[in-house]
Image (cartoon, rainbow, N blue to C red; front, side, top):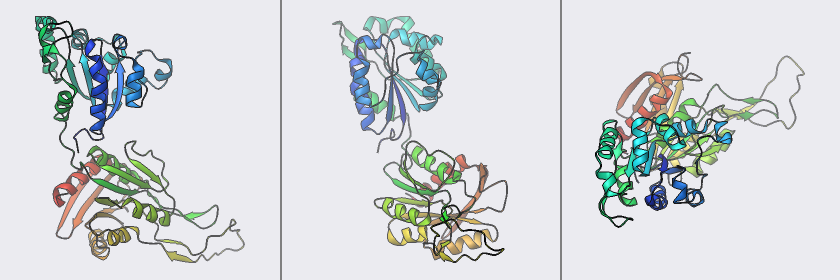
Length: 398
């Protein structure tokens, strides 16, 4: 799998005859698994129509700096924040000069100033323009700022001149862009993650559940996506939004989650059971709301299916990472769960602490497998998720 898998790329197209290559470049980036949005300068639309790029990308093409509909959601800022890479191809001499001087008179130049993304340009201009000291100085200035310069190519140009200046071929641009990103840790892997609580109905109004916020599972899903994996996130009811680059499956009960997990585990490489599944459910769910008739009520409960052990037993070649949310004897209980449920490894944490675990934005956990224990000190769940993914890959050689 390419290092561009799941990467978000803004393809900036500036004015010049080489703009026709951008259509092919767009396709090649998509073939590598990238999610591509196109931004065109006013001059670019004179060479290739936005409709062409829209049809190829499957998304609206952005052309206007002042777009009332987009600006209601801060369009250029949101685009700038969205991207992992801003690739300007072709990059005309004029636009390169604008980049050097920090102009923001077009949507694309405004995005250039606002984005924290990796920057790359594929210059395209007449050989004499490329050889001019001003152009060479501008290119050197961009390089000093960390902008990747791809090309230009040397050969026959549209004007009939021969020499350096024409835009590199799309395959060369894509290969150069791939080198800007390290190969993802989970490239080519399918990862299934469960998150959040389950709700076990007592009647149409009431249910049994727990305090799980889903934050850890969702952070793991985001980290796995960033690591290049194909991610299926199976979630109980929570109040946070799922990463937009994963397959999301919403469930309510433990039985729902089990069925979704067994289905998603087909063809998967890794199963991460971060959900806090209710251990018991009502033996019989009342069809009408239970009325208060006395000071005491007795409800008969039955054990829920054990999702993680069922998945582990059903899919022998799957790497299964479980979670143990405990309030005492943390490692001892976690090791018992690891062995009893035949898991590959387990993450243990102390949910009796108010500063970590359920509903908190930070966590402190231990990774436990058959012959090791590694403590991850208190840190944000976002960072912890990245660290767990990296440790899992390096420790298990996945």
